[in-house]
Image 1 (cartoon, rainbow, N blue to C red):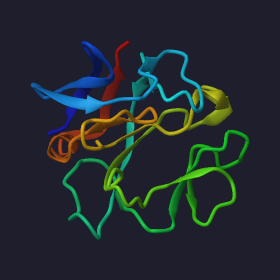
Image 2: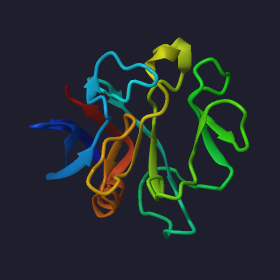
Image 3: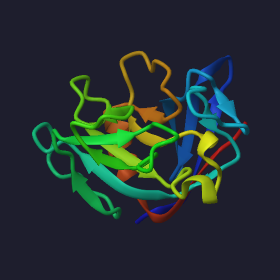
Image 4: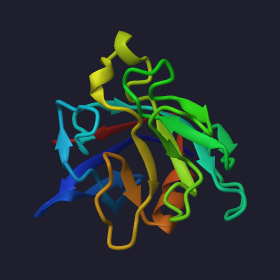
Length: 178
């Protein structure tokens, strides 16, 4: 059964870590190196505060993991998958096929961070919704060892992420508090 609301709040004493509250549990997470911001901008490293994020899809590395259990739409990551983060490009904040000339992120990563990755609706409508300067994709993905800061995403350890993803559906909303 999907949880309806996931709250993310900064961890006291550590501006780049958070507590994720969902389904009666409190989980540890990493957030952006720029902490949280209501004035999110491309490249600031902040996690968007006071935004209602909706999950769109769950991506996973099938060569490393079995298909995850989740009410979300699930898609297997391919080696040619990327995500455009070039604000002036027509594919800004969207999936692209690699090789890709403009600035982008590789979804197929050696560090395992995107082995499980939820894509949120943050700034998906580009200039017509929040403006291109609002920053590209915000994902929920696997944390690096030590919960190192992200570029603005929300990152949990793999067991907690799998637990949460099994309970995250299309109607779940994620709110990041300041």
